[in-house]
Length: 405
Ligand SMILES: *Cc1c(COP(=O)(O)O)cnc(C)c1O
Image (cartoon, rainbow, N blue to C red; front, side, top):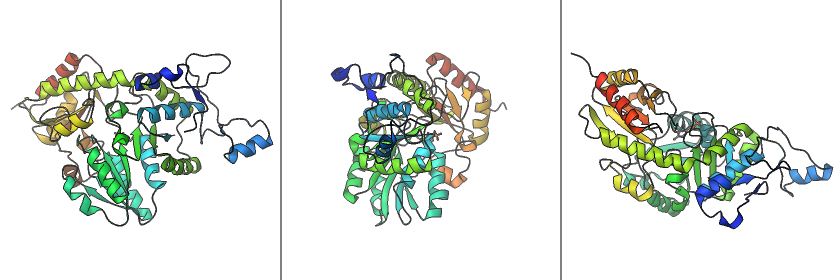
């Protein structure tokens, strides 16, 4: 990692991640600003013809052009790399730009991806509709049937791509087991860690080579900007950086500034999202209007023990499946009063989403069922409001969505 733009005014005492997420900072200017300014500049100046030559030849470090690097994006990357225990990274305009770059930079025609079936809608679309155009194929495997994965690995398999917990099915995959599987076959393990965030789990500790994030969600945490990032092994990031530098999906300096500021509160936000979500899940667990309540730290979750083992907290997402299917779910959405109706998640505000009619509507009914999206499933991104107010709103909406006979 080129950390020349960065410095710490607390040097050796910066051992803990909460401190790093606050104190890693772009170098101060002569004005000695306390908060980092936004470097709204498309390019940077060369000191001389020779300096320009050296920069382009990678003989000296420095910023050239904000498509390649910028002090704000470097600060953001340095922080996430530190929080994820990774060597290096590159920041993208969106989470999907990061997901796509992870495939496009490292794979070629003929290569094969082993992917868990339960993925974010657009990741699913990239694998099924876009990559096959360039001869990159995939096989979907079931998160709940790990014993079936090994026999789907073929000679051309190069990468394993998973989400844990997955969006929105909240499937949990054993990262320790995955790390061993990828070692046995020499594969690249790429984990979308968006739902957990580095506060809850660090996939690289289990051997993940790449950790991908949509920073739009919990990393921003206040529903303001889009962003994405991949951190991981230096030699892989080098290829991703080359790809991104030429093809231009860079994160804007302003968004990087927002996201880097957000990281200062990530730890306390994730603790609170998780404790609110657990309380909500507990209050709903025995509700007779629901077919199922799913939350990683609820003992009824099929992978409760595993979740407890690899996650520090349960995260901020709870799903409920209403009795009465698609129509009931729509009535529920229309009955909510305080919570927001939106496709986003990870905000301070509680958001309710009906994946079957929105985020995952591009999937056929069969595909939806295979990824654990039932017609009556509601994804609740539990915010930071008072938990009693959140619970009251959800309970009222469950009640109101009953059909009056
Ligand atoms: C939202 C999301 C993405 C995509 O991120 P964008 O920033 O919206 O492009 C990828 N993976 C997961 C798990 C997500 O929730």
